[in-house]
Length: 256
Image (cartoon, rainbow, N blue to C red; front, top):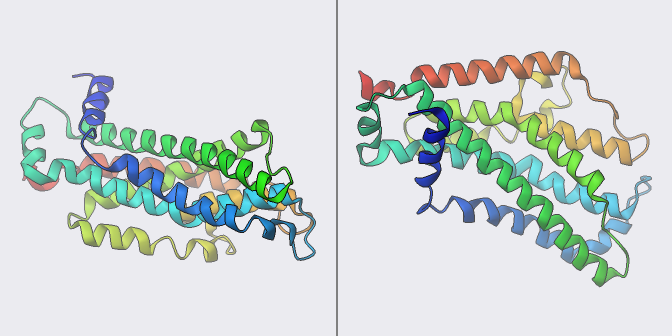
């Protein structure tokens, strides 16, 4: 079975799961307060930022810091549990199929689900901005050319975090412990971006991206340039190491 067919099989396994509502729920929940409190976007506390950019960044900030990492943690565990439950892993490994290829296929599905959630996030932003604009008689809508690049930056910067969480789900067999460890890793991300070694902590990457964007829009608050070195080499190394170890350890218990 080639890799694309294997990814298709993994996607079909999700038809009866509740992953799609799981992806949509945090997006909806995060934008409802933004709409209800849209008037607060005008109160910038003396910071030179437009209300529409303030509305956009505040809404995205909650998703980036909490909801996106939490969703990735839960999705990784659920994807891994589809094989563990019902001796599915044993059945899959009885086929002439590489465990490493199966691990990469599942991680690919995770990334596709994450991309879908980012699409939901953009759609929810425009719907919320439209409603808020009607309520406040002020346009909160930003051009698509501004929204899509920052969304793409958040998506790409989150890939090392997704790889790390996938490794965690593979290594920690107990779902409760795996989810607990993943969720616990979210909290320090705010603190890590203020240290010299933030680039060694993938959960802080998307938050770093949104804060750089905030610096671009709020003059004199934060740096407005990405520190690509040593960030990119570190991110690439962490991603490769996480995926490599996940491929090596995937199904290890069942293969013993």
